[in-house]
Image (tube, rainbow, N blue to C red; front, side, top):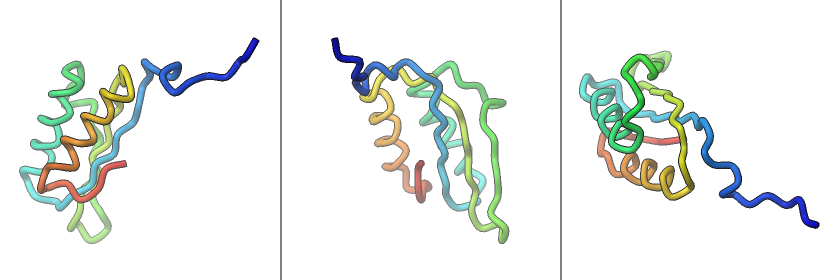
Amino acid sequence: MSSENTLEDLFPCAFPVKVMGAAVPEFQQRVQEIVRRHAPEVQEADFTTRSSRGGRYCALTVVVQARSREHMDALYRDLSACELVTMTL
């Protein structure tokens, strides 16, 4: 009997998502809107914000309840398509 797990065996799980972009006022709002489209249970208080040392960039982190790889792929695709987003981890 094999005890190998597949990637799908990991879901659902809490998954941290970090999004970085320019520190402009609309960055945080746009990222929150995109995340909530995919994870409506996420509240504004669930996001943590960190500015770069020089203040030019901002990083938002939120933990979402990942339902599947497809769910997370769709979220990352939408975040990457946003012109205000520089990088997602």
